[in-house]
Amino acid sequence: MNFDPRDFSDLTRKATELMAVTADVPTVLRGRLGEHNELSRAADKMLASVEAFVHELRSFDASAEPAITDTFEDL
Amino acid sequence: MIRTLSEARSRATELAVSIGSRLGTEHRLTELANAAASGIENTLREVRSSAAGTQVSAAGLTDLHGALQTGAQPPATAPAIDAASPVVASFAAGTGLDAEHWLSAFVNELLAQARTSGGITFENAERLLQQRKDEFLRDFLTARRMYRAYPQLFPEIADETRQVVTL
Image: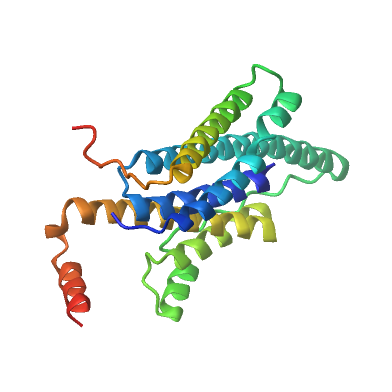
């Protein structure tokens, strides 16, 4: 699979911006609606999924060798 | 808050499409990107529905207050426009677009919302357009996944691709 590693630096930067934009959402919702409100919990899950994505993307981008795992790794 | 989440959803969807086009739709990074976009989408939907509930009850109280003061009845809600209405049909026909084109659906929704809320705002128009864009990106991802999994079902696309490659 061919790709330019520089593309992923740009994608990582954009993903980091995305995480920064969403970072405050759970705190704001919790402050307005309370700790146990369903919306606050949904926002926590959202932020966790964004963080997991950004963490994985950073690891992928940081690896010097673009060792793409095969799409059949689950087989 | 809604604007922040709406922009975040747009960014996340574009990231998912970009990563999916580079690594494939079944790669773990693509799945994580899709999960992040879905998480934002869910939160946005819940925040919107929560905000809409608040606005509806506030508007209801205002209408009731006005009715009590003037002795008039609250304004009736205008009927929603369906896809077969003359306005939408004439729009689609007038522009030469297919009735299922996203622009027809967008105009349809915008007019329906204008009737029910009594006006069109930039924010509502932006939100509806963003929804159309996200739906398009989701459909695009699904179509590409189907094409990759079952290329034999799309012989005309395969033929076009072959012709481009030979040129």
